[in-house]
Image 1 (cartoon, rainbow, N blue to C red):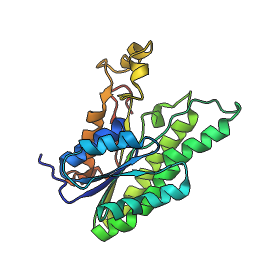
Image 2 (tube, rainbow, N blue to C red; image 1 turned 45 degrees about the vertical axis):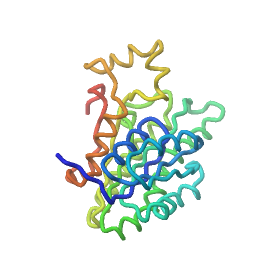
Image 3 (cartoon, rainbow, N blue to C red; image 1 turned 120 degrees about the horizontal axis):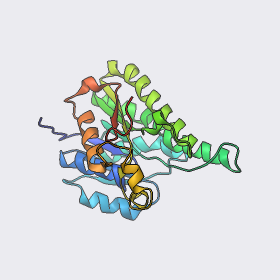
Image 4 (spheres, rainbow, N blue to C red; image 1 turned 135 degrees about the vertical axis):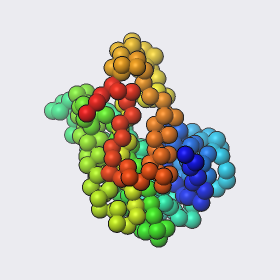
Length: 250
């Protein structure tokens, strides 16, 4: 299957490292111009931008924990790129906490804001630009934790479950506007953020969750995202695609 994204404009949140970086790389390799969003690490985001194939890519800093900043991000990306027709909501945070412990509600609210509410705000900002383009593709990066549970981080599990529900609701609502919405739900993925776990004492047990004895790579997740935004498989509309090496099946 030949995929070309020439002429497409994409915003990838959380693109300064990990899955977001891999997604930005693959979209640019297929011809898209990419807005590389980052939260704090401008230097890392600029390094990603310099890695991207082709011209016209930009970096955009934005604190997704701030609703006003999140609501303005898609407009900023469209202004920088001359439009917007691909959005990949990848940014997220993971904080361990127990319900009822000191500070738990702050962790809960912060996690839901960054992992769920900000995604809705960025989507809302992107829709007018996609309507003007006459098409759009939205991918929300969720987690297998939405299904199997996150006992050490219940806010994370709740937010990702909400993101899946949001994806499916919008898939039905936006299909008549030629905007396709898909969720991608990875399990463990080898990234800079997870490396300390995967290379530490927990690593063997984590890999043993999969019958293949491995975890996914960021490039594998990015390949699924590429298919979802390619326009070659829009029957995926409303799907939540598991990318977890069969470590959790539903």
